[in-house]
Amino acid sequence: MDSLFSPEQLPIVQALANLGFTNPFGTERIKLEKIVLGHQYTPAFQVWVITPTHQGFSPNLTALAQSAEQHMASAQQRLKKGYQPQETEWQLYGELALYTLYYRYESEFYKILTSDHLSRVVMPFYRHFAEHWHSLIGKSPLSQAEHWSAAHMFALFFQIRRAFHFIFRAILGTSQPAAQLRMAVWQSIFGHDVRRYHRALYLRMHEVSTLILGESGTGKELVASAIGLARYIPFNPKTQRFEGDYLADFQAVHLAALPLTLLESELFGHRKGSFTGATSDRAGYLETQHHGQSVFLDEVGELPAEVQVKLLRVLQNRRFQRLGDNQSREFYGKIISATHRDLAADIEKGLFRADLYYRLCSDIIRTPSLAVQLADNADELAHLVTLVTAKIVSSDIANEVAAEAQQWISQHLSHYRWHGNMRELEQCVRSILIHGYYYPAQSHQRMSPIQQFTDKIAQAQLNYQELTSQYYALVYQKTGSYEAAGQLLGTNWRTVKTHIDTTFLQKLQSP
Ligand SMILES: Nc1ncnc2c1ncn2[C@@H]1O[C@H](COP(=O)(O)OP(=O)(O)OP(=O)(O)O)[C@@H](O)[C@H]1O
Image: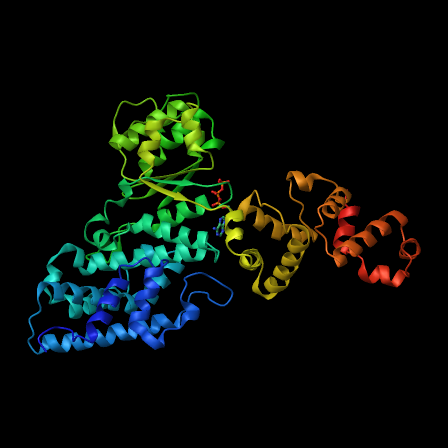
């Protein structure tokens, strides 16, 4: 054999190498996994989305890691026998080593992630990791390059693990728009070409600002925090510590909630005496967020004109001044901003500076409304209710509460637009948990229960059972007893009691 990998191995090794650089939330990954695993591939676990039966474990991953180990072992044997690879073969070998090494340590990185202090202490397993790195990569010419060093790989692997965790756990939904959102967030962190990121961009991504657009309650802050918490944090092999704690990497500023001076002071900081109440010098968020850390400007569309100009300067020159101070300071962090407003319309009306928009628009992520997600998949609402309920209540009652919420929603809100999006759905589930019902504040829902009932009759939206059970409730409410209701309806009191819609009755009786 005059190559590092045999012709049979080559497509599999190439697929494994590419997998290490592929967006895990995209469809390309599925194709690559199928190439590696062939008939061993388990389709049930192909999409990276949380469902009640898929909480993160996939047998495909175990099989992929085993395959990588086997091909790695055979390549190492060839090398031991004195085979001298070409440059492109070294590259392929290195990428296979990267994939292999990641899965040897994936669970260790997960442990750091799920403990609230581990990322600040000496990494207990780095020494072991470095030994594995040495036996796989250390003797190859790749090891001379900084981006193939053990410390960089260690830092990159922890970043990948974090990015996956925050996207996979936080952004829920099986619909196509939700899947596209997960893909877009991954891309915002690593770019579309992860090889380039690995080689050159990892210390510079914070220079790109991210703008998140979407209706209120669609997860803009969720997306922003996933991006912020998944930044690249360099690892220092001498101290065996990360040079930062990811938990401090995200700072949200809710712009619309702050009066002008306070807002400027929060962002840029101030000098003592620069305004009434400025009793001492203070650093703002642009100063306290160090290398690569994020400042999230929520509701950037609401920024007053004078702050827009200052922000423009930060984005242009990466410099700013504290209020009342002449000293120019450098901004080392990343700006992530968000708005539910139509910025194009605001620019036209002169409410938002076009030049500021053009400084923010290199990386735009759009969060889909809940209505868009539901339109993609009819079963999505029930699915989301199950997941949202699992976040709200303990697992022993989650199924029961979810079933109750699903039933209420399908009976009363089947055509509802969910103007408050996922946030409203969460509150709806909470309200059903506490009160047994949820009445949205939107126009149709502002009608009295009787108006809603007649409205639905006029629109032929009720089936026979809903029509009679709600009518029984209405008659019961008017007559005051099952017996009197039965008489009026021409039936007996038992039938009324059995078939009455109690939820609708509660609605009629609530003040
Ligand atoms: N795609 C989603 N997956 C899971 N939860 C979500 C999603 N979108 C929103 N949520 C939940 O809805 C709530 C509101 O989310 P978030 O604050 O991120 O929305 P937002 O778009 O920033 O809202 P606003 O514009 O009002 O600030 C949070 O509890 C969040 O967990």
